[in-house]
Amino acid sequence: MAKPRIVAIDDEAEFINMLQDYFEPRGYDIDVSLRGARGIEIIKEKAPDVVLCDLKMPGIDGDEVLKLLKNMQPSPKLIFVTAYDDGGKTKARLLKLGAYAYFDKPITSLKELEDTINRASGN
Ligand SMILES: [Mg+2]
Image (spheres, rainbow, N blue to C red):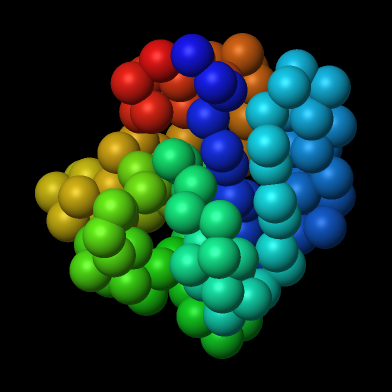
Protein backbone atom coordinates (compact mmCIF):
# COMPACT_ATOMS: atom_id res chain seq x y z
CA MET A 1 0.00 0.00 0.00
CA ALA A 2 1.27 3.49 -0.80
CA LYS A 3 2.50 5.55 2.11
CA PRO A 4 -0.05 8.05 3.44
CA ARG A 5 -0.02 11.57 2.05
CA ILE A 6 0.49 14.08 4.84
CA VAL A 7 -0.04 17.82 5.17
CA ALA A 8 1.46 19.43 8.28
CA ILE A 9 0.43 22.88 9.49
CA ASP A 10 2.31 24.60 12.29
CA ASP A 11 3.53 28.15 12.83
CA GLU A 12 6.76 26.79 14.32
CA ALA A 13 9.24 26.37 11.45
CA GLU A 14 11.58 24.21 13.50
CA PHE A 15 8.84 21.71 14.20
CA ILE A 16 7.73 21.60 10.54
CA ASN A 17 11.34 21.02 9.47
CA MET A 18 11.72 18.20 11.95
CA LEU A 19 8.59 16.49 10.57
CA GLN A 20 9.89 16.81 7.02
CA ASP A 21 13.30 15.46 8.02
CA TYR A 22 11.65 12.44 9.60
CA PHE A 23 8.92 11.59 7.08
CA GLU A 24 10.45 12.46 3.70
CA PRO A 25 13.36 9.99 3.87
CA ARG A 26 10.86 7.32 4.93
CA GLY A 27 8.96 7.72 1.68
CA TYR A 28 6.02 9.80 2.82
CA ASP A 29 4.61 12.54 0.62
CA ILE A 30 4.56 15.44 3.09
CA ASP A 31 3.63 19.06 2.39
CA VAL A 32 3.96 21.69 5.05
CA SER A 33 2.63 25.14 5.82
CA LEU A 34 3.32 27.69 8.52
CA ARG A 35 -0.17 29.15 8.17
CA GLY A 36 -3.63 27.62 8.43
CA ALA A 37 -5.00 29.43 5.37
CA ARG A 38 -2.20 28.20 3.09
CA GLY A 39 -2.45 24.78 4.70
CA ILE A 40 -6.12 24.55 3.74
CA GLU A 41 -5.25 25.44 0.13
CA ILE A 42 -2.65 22.68 0.04
CA ILE A 43 -5.15 20.22 1.55
CA LYS A 44 -7.70 21.05 -1.18
CA GLU A 45 -5.04 20.60 -3.82
CA LYS A 46 -3.44 17.39 -2.52
CA ALA A 47 -6.33 15.60 -0.79
CA PRO A 48 -4.01 14.11 1.86
CA ASP A 49 -4.91 11.09 3.99
CA VAL A 50 -3.77 12.77 7.18
CA VAL A 51 -3.36 16.34 8.38
CA LEU A 52 -1.02 17.14 11.26
CA CYS A 53 -1.98 20.43 12.82
CA ASP A 54 -0.98 22.77 15.60
CA LEU A 55 -3.73 24.26 17.73
CA LYS A 56 -2.56 27.81 18.40
CA MET A 57 -1.58 29.66 15.24
CA PRO A 58 -2.10 33.17 13.95
CA GLY A 59 -5.03 33.42 11.51
CA ILE A 60 -6.83 30.14 10.96
CA ASP A 61 -6.18 28.05 14.07
CA GLY A 62 -6.51 24.34 14.72
CA ASP A 63 -10.17 24.53 15.70
CA GLU A 64 -11.04 26.16 12.38
CA VAL A 65 -8.95 23.64 10.45
CA LEU A 66 -10.93 20.84 12.12
CA LYS A 67 -14.25 22.47 11.12
CA LEU A 68 -13.11 22.94 7.53
CA LEU A 69 -11.84 19.36 7.23
CA LYS A 70 -15.07 17.90 8.52
CA ASN A 71 -16.90 19.48 5.60
CA MET A 72 -14.49 18.14 3.00
CA GLN A 73 -15.16 15.13 0.82
CA PRO A 74 -13.11 13.00 1.31
CA SER A 75 -12.32 14.24 4.78
CA PRO A 76 -8.66 13.81 5.82
CA LYS A 77 -7.98 12.52 9.34
CA LEU A 78 -6.76 15.26 11.64
CA ILE A 79 -4.05 14.69 14.22
CA PHE A 80 -3.32 17.57 16.56
CA VAL A 81 0.22 18.13 17.76
CA THR A 82 0.32 20.94 20.26
CA ALA A 83 2.00 22.29 23.36
CA TYR A 84 -1.31 23.71 24.51
CA ASP A 85 -2.24 22.13 27.81
CA ASP A 86 -5.28 22.82 29.94
CA GLY A 87 -5.33 19.54 31.79
CA GLY A 88 -6.87 17.57 28.94
CA LYS A 89 -10.05 19.62 28.49
CA THR A 90 -9.21 20.83 25.00
CA LYS A 91 -7.94 17.39 24.03
CA ALA A 92 -11.23 15.78 25.07
CA ARG A 93 -13.24 18.47 23.28
CA LEU A 94 -11.32 18.13 19.99
CA LEU A 95 -11.48 14.33 20.02
CA LYS A 96 -15.22 14.57 20.59
CA LEU A 97 -15.49 16.97 17.65
CA GLY A 98 -13.85 14.39 15.40
CA ALA A 99 -10.08 14.83 15.65
CA TYR A 100 -8.39 11.44 15.13
CA ALA A 101 -5.66 11.89 17.72
CA TYR A 102 -3.92 14.45 19.87
CA PHE A 103 -0.19 14.53 20.63
CA ASP A 104 1.55 16.74 23.16
CA LYS A 105 4.61 18.75 22.22
CA PRO A 106 7.43 18.14 22.49
CA ILE A 107 6.84 14.85 20.66
CA THR A 108 8.60 12.12 22.59
CA SER A 109 8.33 9.50 19.84
CA LEU A 110 8.04 10.29 16.14
CA LYS A 111 7.66 6.56 15.60
CA GLU A 112 4.47 6.66 17.66
CA LEU A 113 3.22 9.56 15.54
CA GLU A 114 4.14 7.61 12.40
CA ASP A 115 2.24 4.54 13.63
CA THR A 116 -0.80 6.70 14.37
CA ILE A 117 -0.65 8.26 10.90
CA ASN A 118 -0.56 4.80 9.35
CA ARG A 119 -3.49 3.64 11.45
CA ALA A 120 -5.46 6.77 10.58
CA SER A 121 -5.00 6.15 6.87
CA GLY A 122 -5.88 2.47 7.13
CA ASN A 123 -2.33 1.18 6.51
MG1 LIG B 1 1.62 27.37 17.51
